[in-house]
Amino acid sequence: MKQLECDECGSKFQCGSNTEKPCWCHNLPNLRSNFDLAGKCVCPDCLTDGTAKQITKMRKKKSAQRNADKIELAR
Figure (cartoon, rainbow, N blue to C red):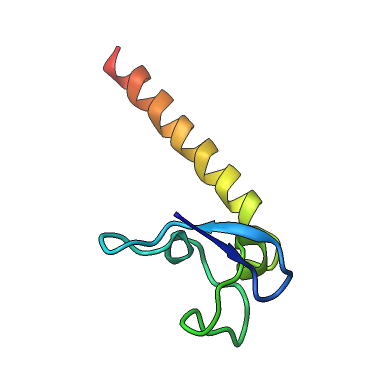
């Protein structure tokens, strides 16, 4: 993982891209209206206008619920 500095706010963040997989930013929605992902590296909060933490939390919650439902169905 590479440590980068956000071109928008200056915060430090990790880029997970390598030759075998794309960066984490490809898994988050680009909620910014005229923003080209190929031109800059920005942190999750700047990419999603401050909603990255909420999106990640919601995905984890839904995943946990799906897993709990699978266990319940298996009984």
